[in-house]
Image 1 (spheres, rainbow over the protein chains, first blue to last red):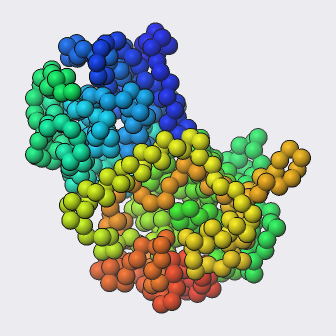
Image 2: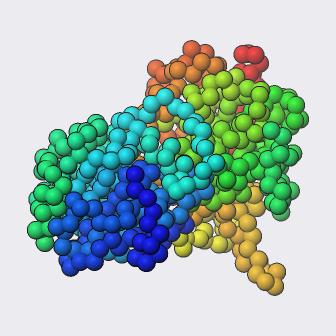
Image 3: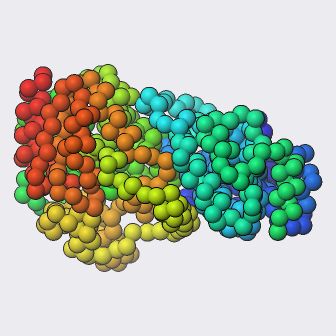
Length: 227
Length: 327
């Protein structure tokens, strides 16, 4: 799990507004060209340094702390959905412009959603393993009202840990996003899956035409070459 | 937990005073207090004797507890205590940064725990509140004695059957609308107007309800804006401008209906058969195959989605008869 680097969080943080939330967008490394945007896993935050996996990326590297994570606002009373986090990323993209996204765990699922939501701004997504990759399955399970322990308010927000660990991800819903991406993206192969673990939603994504499977470095090389 | 233990000491209880409008048979609640749901204040109201058997009533989307001001006193007349609350972002409850079905469930559970920590109660829900209470009946089966669902049974049969390319195009529009909406919510405010104008605006979504009733609701679900000189600048609904009509996400209507057959307590289902914008368009044929073991089902011709407002005496009669028949 990554930790907050207090130096990075004060020096290279861009503050963005999404509704009543202030988001922290971290500049991890300067560069020339299209930005690479990192999306962390459930309960994590943007790493203190650009990951070694992305060292060949020539453009600037940013990381976004989702709502309730890292240096972003912790809301009162929860209410998290993956669709809200998609809008977090939309806020970052409207600031950055066109970007390639490297999503980890929960961030991989959110990367799929935002690539469907903003196919003109997202220039390729790389979906990797990490916390929150599985979600809550493809249909609702037994209903329960989980107790949220607020004695340690976070970050990460305890509500986020509970709610985003059980968000339902139907396969047909995931496929609808793949089809959005395939229909409107300017790239021929805009989705690269590098995750070893394949929950049902991700297995459905991999089964769609045009989705490639390869290591992270190779995926980033492919997307870096796409103008 | 007694209400006095729940109320934050520095905030006055939610307003239950009579307002500038009245409506035949409508009565404001007898008590009010705040319930904290993860730190968010939920405005909670009660009608009836504090020791009468409790009924927890969940309102529908974009409504508030005051919409039970006619129905609740009718149930109190049947020796019941009615507890209702304004959902987060609605009425006088706190405006949250985030909204979700699971958050609404948690808020409802917090109110139920606070209002009746030991005694199981009747769960009653209208529209979206009906769906919430269906879910809660599964999550907290030890907390209810009966379930009453009023026009709150979504059915997949009324969702359009679209070809793939049509679905892709429709999702494109939904995604653009959702993302644009999220960028605008920080600065969004409800449009002000006269009391009469707010009522007329609401009538567009509730075309079967009367102007008189909707004007009665404005001072409860809205607030009058007054400038520094004390001059009115008009009324505004208190509803959080960040809330948006129409769902977005992976939810499927059949997920709610699939909760119905497994309810172990007696269930009363009431459906208004006049189709309208705020309703689900569910037909009896969608409901009957999902009947739970003990089920009374009433489908009313010539009545719309707001069954309990159009025909409060009929609904109250159903509920009290049903409770008496299944003690």
